[in-house]
Length: 109
Image (cartoon, helix red, strand yellow):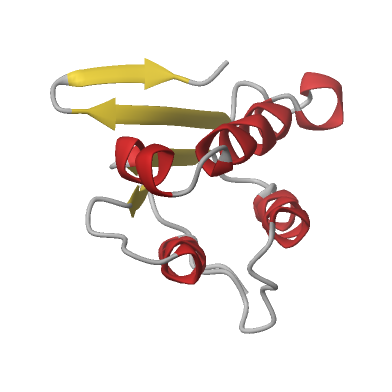
């Protein structure tokens, strides 16, 4: 279902529409065709990725979705924080999520 990549990069820099944001997530994280383009489906597909290999997700252009879609960025970050601590931190050392803004990198803890 998922093709393992050393790093998954989600780039929202040129997003214009809400669904386009979810299409980018689906494509870059290699989510299945039935991905429902909502935060519950995002969670379900993220947790399906957990396994034997580390997961490194890099997010670019988050400021674009913050400006265009009200609290969508904070909802997404909330899901990613929960994912980082999935199964009572069982995979905490295997999951790296960072937000990139120019030269600044912020890890989601």
